[in-house]
Length: 293
Length: 312
Image (tube, rainbow over all chains, first blue to last red; front, side, top):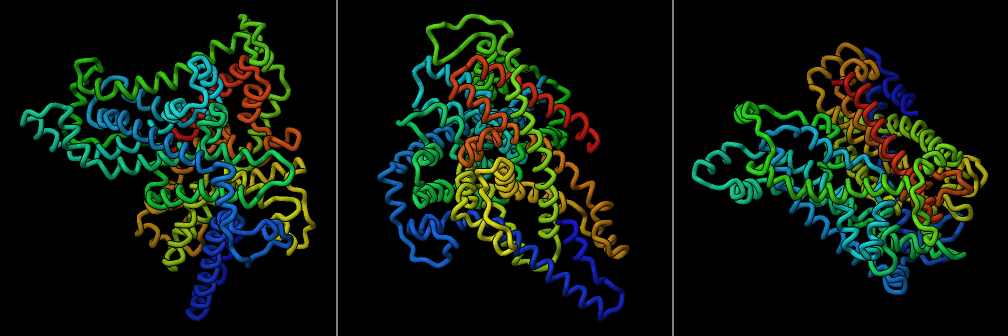
């Protein structure tokens, strides 16, 4: 389909000036139409979720679908307090911010070392860090469930915080290594000549200068942790259940409360969309983890 | 992972390279790296060893009185003989073969539209809108899918009715359920392909593109001869990452269909989760997880060997 549209864009391109002008105008119209389709198809499912969350149950289940309706916040109140989505959002917040902080604490020194020092096996170490991106969560979830059971860590925040390090730590290392490479090495050398220790050089000079990249990596670590379902589904019950788990809990029962489900979905997704828009310029870098520059 | 390892060489790092430090406790690098490496080893490698150990033992959570005797390769043999496992794997591979080309084609189209000059305001809006699908929590993508493809009041049936298509039971029919999952995956990940390919397109020198435009008016010729080399690294990245992601695919499928109807959308990760946590056979699930891990490694190695080398 895309190719035929592509072909259409070049139709009517002829050397004569008048025909060229109408051809160009027609190409612009197609271009605008294509951009409109891209925009609408990206936004529509999200729009549909948000509007459904604001519709009364009768409107939400209406067929043909209702496009204009009087909005209500009742589903948000029901979801947050009756179904305790509020508690699960707090769990998500605790888990995602803890793992992010931990990933930054552990990851930035490692990233600095990878950016500044040369040593044997550096490539392998780097590859190992990044290859965590490839491993299916189910591969780790199975053994981790048994380990957590033995250590009596099922349904605690700590087990998720640790497990989420498997992806938040590599993403911090990946983005920050890049960032530290951009800090001029002359600054390091000057500080070392003045007698500063390696740790001080890292802490006092490099860390502040790399702060933009660190913030970006923190946002990515947070988004990835917030979005996980599989680990949380397997390793939590009631106390530490995160919001994606809470969203799946509606699925039992005969008639589904669609308004509440979509309200929960909106509450989960909206902060992430805002975060992602903040780092949209580096989204590709974050999602590819170094497979492409 | 691939290009990322290529360092810019400035004189200082070149001098360091000659020094060839060994990583050992007296080097500061060791202490910078140690906490992260240690943490990742404990949470990333130790569980794999546990899984390896469990995979050669009987480990039924529902029947723990039976103990966890050593059973050798029985779990692996059972997996190899398990038609359902291979069906789940085949379903996943088919999904990969059907969905990935679609995402790449649509992504390329979107990237070209976003790269084309003119209509700056619309291009900016379209580009920003691409962030939304990617940022949507995978589990919620599945929930949205259930809403849109609902048999009774779903908006998909409504939109199709304009084209004279009668209402479909999207999530109740095995083939349509598979297609619905595909559509939601395409929705979420086409923007990813588009942005990567767009990043490649912006690397093309403006002069080369303009010179080519004077030579030919055929868009495809420019794409093939001028822009293709800049698109290939991104394309490789898409192949590697999306393949790995599809072997991982769980959240959206779980909330959208739970692998159903029947086993129509039971992909490999969903199947292993069912064996391990709904049928409680941890030994068998561990063996399957190990096989999935091996498959992931082999697949990404193959991609790197046969595709990335070509590009690089």
